[in-house]
Structures are given as C-alpha cells and as structure tokens.
Length: 157
Image 1 (cartoon, rainbow, N blue to C red):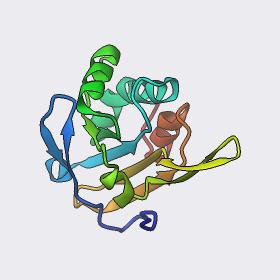
Image 2 (image 1 turned 135 degrees about the vertical axis):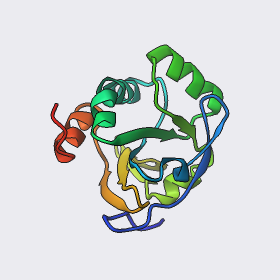
Image 3 (image 1 turned 45 degrees about the vertical axis):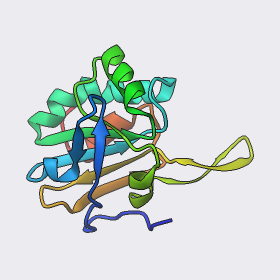
Image 4 (image 1 turned 60 degrees about the vertical axis):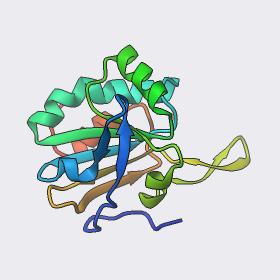
C-alpha cells in the first residue's frame, strides 16, 4: 500500500467516469484548489450525510476557490441515482477497482467489530492549483467532517 500523502507530494493523476459516464481527470481541475474526498458507498447513511454536507457547503467552498469531487468504488449507475436523489451538483467518480483510492492511500486494512478486512478509508485530500497536495486527512468521520474541513481551510462557516 502506498504511503499516505502529505503536503508537498504530487497528487496522483486519475481518469475516472463520473455519474453521467463522462471521463473526468485531475487535470480538469488544474489551476484551482480541489477537494478530493473518498467515501465507501453511495446512498448509505454516513456517506449520504457527508455528501449532503459537501452539497450544502459547495457555494462557500467554490467562493473560496475550491472545487469538490467525490470518489467511491460504486458503479456509474449507482452514482447517478445517488447524485439525483440528493441533488449533488459536484462530480462523483467511479473507482470500481479502487486503483485511484490505492494511489491516494485511501484503500487498506479496516477493522469492524474485531474483524479485519480491506476497504475504503474515508479520506480527504486537498490538491493545489499546481497539482501538489496541500492537505491530507485520513480516517475522517462522515458527520462533522465538512465543517472541520472548512475550519481547517479557514473558510467561514
């Protein structure tokens, strides 16, 4: 498993399909700050809460110069239903083989009720306009994460 990203690292490039089946790459966000967040599964309670928090904070994030993109192992069809149901207007990208999550160190060993397994580690990486990591947060909580991220980025809530 790759080392966790730290500020100053070059963010791994990616090309994934969004909820409409269009290819989206990190290069599409070059020149702007980009919040790349990894979540385990669309339409689950925690992931819905987190996505809706990003949706509700999107105007403030964009006004401060940040784009938002969510990445999960879900198929495009599930992402499309999730985006429509929750009125999400930022890109949701499908990483079914979790290759991008692995490059971002957002895939690895998890423990639940004493059982270990491989899975997606809820993580957020902020990529600067030059493609360098400016912030990386791993094992974040679904609830309250966006508010904490806004404080960490010094965006008024």
